[in-house]
Length: 631
Image (cartoon, rainbow, N blue to C red; front, side, top):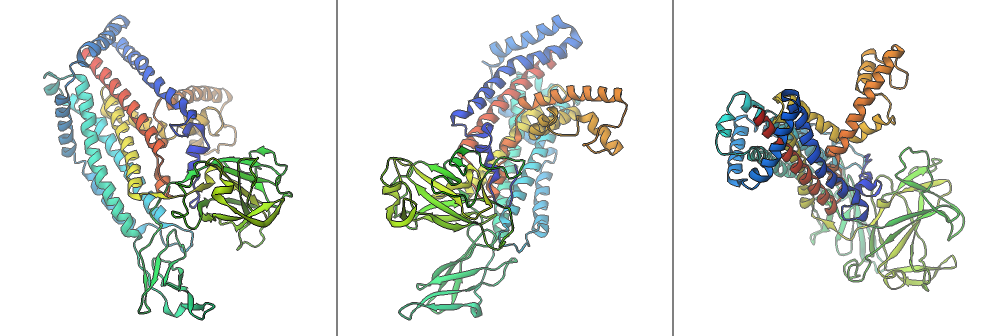
């Protein structure tokens, strides 16, 4: 998921890949079927693995008896007699064990990282489109994620094996306690420790980010210029602010002394001229936001007016389609159209939005020649009525100059020039009354400059009627981290029920790696990525051979290596479909780029975490139960 200087390419989660669409949309039945498949797979894979392990020790008949008896006792005895009181008692012991193991050292490391970050994070760029908020937010979320997952790994993987090795487990199992209560109690106890640390880290991170971004400006009095109106009175004042945190702003205030600065490094300030002639500059705004955009449906048309995917300008990633600039015609010239729904007078009233319908653009520009690099590429916006039989079908063009690598906010006026027979300016049209039909309106985008191109994707043009609370968005990002911690803890405890501590740790790390790099592993298994499997890659590293040339070893040995790698990669690829995809829990880019985390994404994460947590907890119960029987 590439993200370049504020352009929200990460929204491909919802628009570029059907696997990542909203849980509430019909296209996500695949996710629901996948959830059901995991639940069904649990009842076949776990008993079969237990059967294979016990068969090596006791033979097939005894192993079948042990597994069958475990399933029978789980349904008839353990589940009906499950005790929350005993489970919480085990959880309390797990918390005490975590504190004895000095798990709070991880919290100290986190504070040390923040202290170092405050001194060494590179936020000194003078580029006006540079946004230091992205740097700070990405850092605190990434470091919190890594530390919490590492803590969960170390706690969960070594706890049960150490108790079994030191025989302290027998002081527990000799009491009337069940395997399910041991597994769930330890998982909840370690998760409670992780939750407490995560809450503390979240609070400290929030104040660290807000403190790091806080700064003040004053007005450079010598730079202030005044502009008189027709009546001779001062109608406008403009000037510059002082430099603070490696930047300054230009500003304007009106005749009433109210105004604001330009947007630099992702933020701006309100400016007020006081009665005594001095100026007051407010705190920074726009750094910490959570845009809640309203998206439309995109359709791209070529120069002949035929729908398609747009032009490919040579990018391997076909997420965006490009529309050609300067094509002839009015109705048929190359353009892109977004259809927005829910445009009602109650929702978008003139009283609530006096400047017009709020629209934002994040366009990519592809230049076939440089031209004036200081000037953006010219474009046009046309507002259209989706009802082809309506008397008024479209507005006149709204000409604009593209802005690259930053969000271009525009307000579509409530009253627009009309366009009749291709001639703009023939009267006026009312946006809500003439162009909105049954709550729908179309926004057409054209590129005006010949031989230049606009790159567009569905999330690149959206309505922004308002923002969500940044604090709540920040909390949702930490909820995603908490769900990852919960899954890692569950897998660690489950692996520790039948493996030794170091082996359980390696198994847990393998599950995390497969979860984070599942797509990459599948691409290697299918031959899309070069380099080969683990054995071939290891040999290439040893002999220092690049991935684009044939392996320089014996032909027979090469076939053997590739055959073994093919088996290993297919097994790993199959495992990536079963294990949780941790990349779907990564919401760092949403928060760092100032976009609200979709409620449907949170719902999908909660469902996925609940399914996997339940599955691994039941698996851990059966593994521990058969281990106790085998002992």
